[in-house]
Each structure stands twice: as C-alpha cells, then as structure tokens.
Image 1 (cartoon, rainbow, N blue to C red):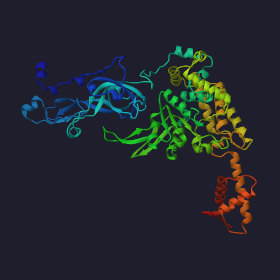
Image 2 (image 1 turned 60 degrees about the vertical axis):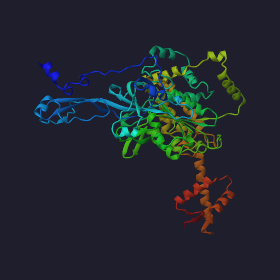
Image 3 (image 1 turned 120 degrees about the vertical axis):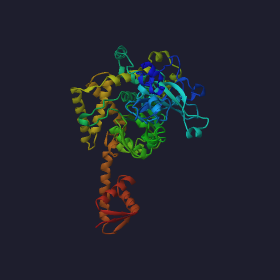
Image 4 (image 1 turned 180 degrees about the vertical axis):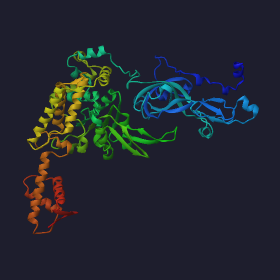
Length: 626
C-alpha cells in the first residue's frame, strides 16, 4: 500500500536523490594528459573534461548555493522538493499534492530553509602564466566555479592546475537577448591542486624525505654550496647570494605579549648598472614558491595594495589584491626601486615593519595581511655610483624607508683586469663548460627549492642562552664603536635584524636552537653590508645615522658650524643694514670661510636661525629681528 501511494504521488513530492546523497562524485584526468594554457581551450572543448594551469588572481567568499529547495504547504502540510540544476530557478507557489488538487484548497507553498540542501560555492579567476603568453599579447583569464569540498583549496597568488568541464554560461531573459549567439564560458571544477611555479608537478607538503635531507646535511660546506647554487650563472657576489639564501629561508614570526615581531627579511641591492641586480631578482622570483615581480615605474599604489572592483556575481564592491597582498608569506621583488613615485613608495613603510596593509576605500575599511619579504634593486641618481656622496645622496631615497631594510648591499663594477678576466672566463663557460667545471656542479633548482621549503616548514629555532649573550655583547660593541667618535653605529633595528638573520641561518642548518655560529655569520653579513652602505665618504667610518636620519655625524656637525658662522656674520652686520639679499650673504659667507659651503648647508643654516627667531626671510631678502 505504501509503495502504491508513493507511486501515485507527484515526482516533486518524493525525496530527490540530491537530498539523500551523502557523497560527491568528481572526475580526474589521466596523469599522461598534460595541462593546457587558457588560450588553448576553444569551442571544441565545450562539454569536455580539460585541465588548465594558471595563477589565481581573485577568489570570492565561500557562499551557500541552493541545491534542493524544500517547501511546506500551509493547507495539507505536505513537503514538496524542487531540485535546482541551473544558476537560477523559479520558486513554486501552489501545492502540487493530490489532496490539495482534489479539494481545490489552493494551498500555498512556503520555502523551508532548514529542510533545503545547500552546497558550498566559490568563484575563482585564473590567469595564464607569463611564459604561456605569445609575443605582443596580454594574459587571458577564465572564470572557475568551485563547489563542495573543493572550496578554500586555493587563494590569490597560488599557482594551480584545475581539472573541470568547460561549459557555456546559461543565461535567461533579457541577458540572453543582449548576448545573442555568443556565450560566456566557465570551468565547472572537478579537481584543483597547487603546483610548483615552473612545472606541473604537485606542490606537496613534504617535499623531501628525512633521508634525503640528512644526506644533504652531511655534505661539507653546505652553506657555501647552497649559496653557490643560487644563480650559479652570475659570477661573484658571494655575500649577496648568502643573504638572498637567508631571505628565502626567512626568520621566525613572533607575538610576545600580543606585539607582532616580523620574521621576514628585507634586502636592498644598489649599485652600478650591469652588475646583475635584475638577474638576481628574476632568479629569486622563479625560485620562491610564492612571489611577485614588479618594477618601480610600472607600479601604482593600487597595483601594489588592492583595487576596489565590483563582483560580477553578487554585484558587491570587493577588494582585489595587488602585488603585496598576492605575495603574502612570500617574496615581492621590486626592480627600479629608485624610479618609483613617492606616493607609491610611502605604502611600503607599513608593509615592511608591521606586515599589514590598511585600506580605507569605497566604504571598505580593513587591514590586509602582507607578510612578505621585500627584495628591491635600485640604480644611483647619476647612473654610476659616486664614491664622494653618501647612500642617501646617491639614491635619492627617503632615509625612513632605507632604515627598514635589514641588509643594504652595494654592488659595484670594479675597474680591475684580474676581475675582468675571471668574469669573462665565467661568462664563456656558460656556453662551453670544461670538465673541471662540470665536476664542480652545483645543486639544481628543484633540489634547492625543496630543501628551502623543508627548512621553512619543519624548523622553528629558538634563541639559545649563549647566542643571546653573544647578540647582546655584539650590539654593545657596535654602539661603543660610534660613541667614541660622536657618531651612531647601531640602532635597536639593527639588533632585530641580527636576530632575524641568525634565526634564518639556524633554519638553514635545520637546527632547533640558534647557536653562536649563527650569530657570528649574521654579524659578518651585517658588517659587510654596513661597510658598503653606511660608510661616511668624508671620514671613511661606518655611521648608521646616514641610513636612519639621512645625515652623517660629520655632516651634522658641519651644518652646526655653518649655522654659527652665519649667525656671527649677521651679528657683525646688525648695526649697518637691517636687511640683506640672500645671494649677497651667501657670497660673503663663501669669501670669509676657509672651507667650502654648499647651498644645502646654507639653506639649512637659515632655517635653523629662522626657527630661533633670529631672522625673517621674505623671498630673497633677509631681515634681522632686533
């Protein structure tokens, strides 16, 4: 009786299979099938299973998508089910049961949310890789629909492979009239997985086994070999390569008492053109599992932070992440750093220290994570490095930004015949390797990348007691060097940089404790970088205040002397004339001074005297205040 009653009922009153099903069915392509680029997916692939490779540029929030709508009749109380197959549906209003139709009671249906079935839904936007774009074209994108347990597997900035069915987007009503015969397409996802940047191999969590890591750790001079394997085609710059290796490994993020201390390392490469700064940046971009590459002139504030766009699905205002957000927990490489506009450069202040990005646009106020290491390259203002000028004067960069870099390396092109011969030999060997060079082969990029990923994932070293005392003594000694000469040779920021570098070196050795050997290497790298970047060209001594305040101690004392000399000269003229022309005063000052006085020093002296209410400057006229 029960079976006959169920058989006479309308199909919409039965339990639909979607409501009873407790599993999801997905299809996976054969491993022999290679992934396609987005532009290779064409009309003949409609309705077929395809695999594409690209980078995720945008992802929406995960929202519930109705799969089965359940209604309840207000007259007979029967439940009615409506399976939803398309992107939109027309709700039912009249009860279709036999009882309501026989009695003609006109029962109304009401949607029961608790009885309906919902599925997790997320929309991704995937863009093809730069190596897949033909000459003169721009990267193409594709919309990807992700459902069920496949959601939240990819975030913006991830390199992924997606297997799914290529389908046209079904539209109804006026939208279909407007679109005509053409249709937008999307990929209905069946499988999604992260891949390494350069190939289709899956980026697994455990990239190296413990046996492989132990075999690599037993090799003598592992640190030097790893550094040599980093961009082996570039000759020299051993300390720079070691610093870049530590940048790839990174320090340890800490939150003592709720205060966030960053573990990422920031490095600036500066110097003459043609010393492979850009080559090092592009190599690190290819090497890092998560990175973004941009240039100073081609970057805007919106491109680095986030752009406000309108979501085509929900029609809401959303944030689309820029380079710094996409490089979260990775590396952001910025070339031509000196050519970046001041407004764009000001964004980096918060990112480089607080590791966050505060946004207040179009009613969206939020703080985005930007836990990224900054690797920048800059050229001097006069194309070639001027040894008579300080770093600030050569680069024309704000000292508040330079002080946030942990290491600043100066890469020069030496005029030396022996160096030129070695460099030329190395360049020729790239095209023709000798047997000796082939035996001295470095680690390949895949092994180096896997080792760095293993160190980042499995090692979180803690600062040992002996290493802590070595750091304290080293910081005190650095302060002592400058205090005797009236200059500042270290700041607390330098001590934090030493801790980060020592932690990174310990991670590279796969050690759970930071030991004195790690601190000594961090101090050596920091000292080598300071020798080049923070040396006062007039005195030849290291002065960190060049990077932190923009002026060396000798320049600061010289400006104080010029201020006193201008004040003395004006005191002598006070009874003669109440005012004097600016150029006339500058000429008299240069005539009576036995040392050269620059226009900047003279302007600074006038500003100081104006602050002391000693004079008033009106245009080119200076008046003394009696």
